[in-house]
Length: 482
Image 1 (tube, rainbow, N blue to C red):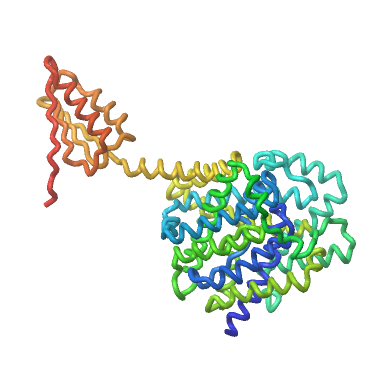
Image 2 (cartoon, rainbow, N blue to C red):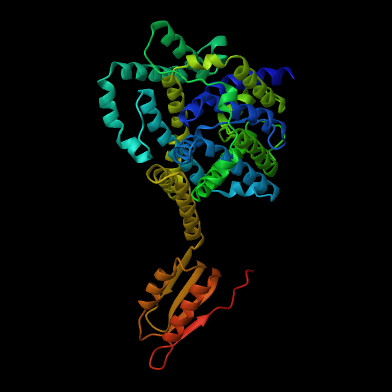
């Protein structure tokens, strides 16, 4: 219990600035980030599934939440999150949790990379105290102009300095020796940024505080009735991304400890229960977060008590010290999220993937670019479609060997898996064979041939065996391995 208590304090200190930062970046009151963190500890933390991973608001959903709030309004967020939680509960009850492990890792990493790029671009505007454009493409293309505007403003330069200093502290804090190094870098960066802005009177915007009870606004009946049909796509996107991120996080956390393994269907239901409560409270959606989860494991947690207690500490902070949030400078939170977005982009993994599996690397890049250019939901669908096409192409490995001894029949041996994807190449080769020579087409080496390919091969053999042409001998009897 002593280890779990100490670990809960570490996770609380890691989660506090992230909860607030994700809420502000999502365009909602800062208190709602704390509410989601509290629910992640007290509700999801008590349920079975994964014993050591920690749930709360995640940077990976920031872009999607911001778009949803901007499109449908803050009251609709609770309905979207509630529907997400109910879908997750249903999928867990139907034992669909394990199927999320079948999603291509390149698609998931591409999704996170795309989110990271949009998050970084948007928070660079926030760090300068500027308003970011709506779309991901406009955010990236508008950065040069924003830099020019910032250079001409003393307030913007001061705000950028606070944000840049926050990132620098987070990067360098890991090298701090002694007890100071045990303090989470994000918390140390926020505390230092707050102290500097207060001591020197730096003109930067700070977090707006409206109180925990005022921020919690359960969705009313009028909100349910006023929703558009387009919100269904947003709900599906929330469900897909939150579930995939949570279950991939669970798999990663399992590799960090020797305790009980994750029960994926139960974990999906635990996430669903948490999101259902968050939806009722009108708060942010939750996922399992690898940063907090790994901090929990490294701090020596042994049971789920640590993640439950971290929720208790968040609740006590929100209830007793809400005014402290008003001291936090917004560029410091922007710096934290720029750092978080950078960590979502798998630079080293992409290089290794390009060397060993270029197709997977291209899927990762295509998914990330699609999210930036189009939107989150369609970008993920594009990545999934490319992954399916790549798998089908690789599964359709057919080898065509032509043996022509100059006299007698031309022998053609087809082996492997013949599908419609390889059919054009197969037919091009067959139709280029001499018309005045008999042909022996041997299909005994095929492991699989689909209907389209089989029909096309038979049609070709019949067409080349008509009166006046040389016959085709078609051999299909399977060869039995010795």
